Length: 290
Image (cartoon, rainbow, N blue to C red):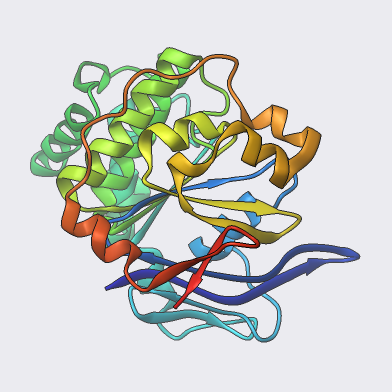
């Protein structure tokens, strides 16, 4: 099943063509990296997939088979689809003065009554589930601390726990490690990869350094000037190939030193399904539908 299907997605902001004819299909259960230099359109594409922006006429986005938006208009099931997509951003988006557990419980607001959400009335079972979600990302001990006391890496993992409470089927992570130190970045990427492997959650993660894509994702989609310029195996993204794609801008995509070994591979059947029906155009080195 296709989790995310984008067809001919374009978006113009004034004179700026942010996206131009994007076509992208991501199978359910895939973990895919989205890379590109600054201004390439990564965040804009993520916002359209999340349903936070509407594309121009002729654009189509389907989520789990249902129309999320078409020709610049949201589909009838837009609200329900938003509940099936979890989004985490570089800025964490936690309420600093509230306990971490309350921030995590925000993930269930779409499933409880408005008055309970307004007054923060949560059951014991819901609080236990929130602590379990924090345990899932490795930080159950911080549940009752104020969010402001957490490190950047801990805050990002709390944001991931919030999406687990949301029971999302798709997780969009927009540069989740851009502001983190290398050790914290590894821990956050380990959590995303583990959730993808063990729970089958579809993950699309935009990254500023291609080395993390090589280590954690079998497939990488590269953007340049709002267009897809590469869609294929992450291990094919050598430094020389990146220079071909981005020129001098490729320097901002490469870490000064290599990351250690790759985590355990995903289910081979999932990977086979994800790449079925795609071929390489040897001239452009892009993957296109067969």
